[in-house]
Length: 233
Image (tube, rainbow, N blue to C red; front, side, top):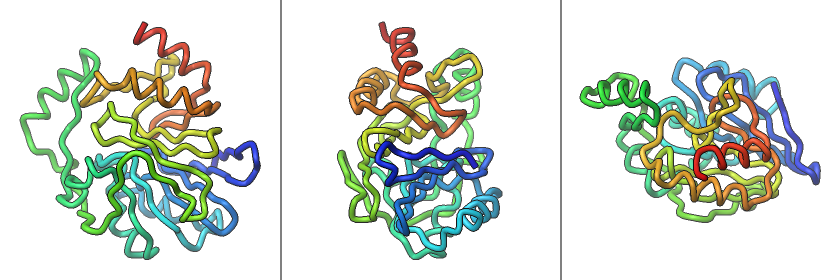
């Protein structure tokens, strides 16, 4: 498993072995916060990753947004670890309903596919609902869960998307950025693409040097700056 350590060496971040969605665990001593839960069929992989890291408990689960590939295991994990689930107020409705809408495409290909699928109710849009969650707005500290980090609102991919800023050093950004092979990090899907410019500016102002997306490898600060000029200048 790939891991990162913050400048103070107090917080460590591991990327778990899930394939469909990058799930991360932020650890500070005996305190652990899980970010996203992947799809249902990867629950066993996720739990095995936690076991390999010798993590017996979770202080909290944070959801970057409510799409099935990020939240399908959240209710089962909440019950198993008896921990709170943290989600944006703007995403909580979907979490409680156990259903998410298909996001809008931002490229010719994804626009065609989402326009087609958007007229249908697809099985993968459904997941086990979670009725018990801590709803947050901007901004929220994770210090009460033993982690030196805070959550900020980063709308764009969805209106309620959030990111976790760990010591202003490493940011876990969900689908706000997606690392592709060609170096492009602009998300292929975004319900509020008009908000991405301001969101990227806000993330850049955190002074984070590493940005960890839910899809693809880590993103450098220089890459964020280059992509910002490419897409918004």
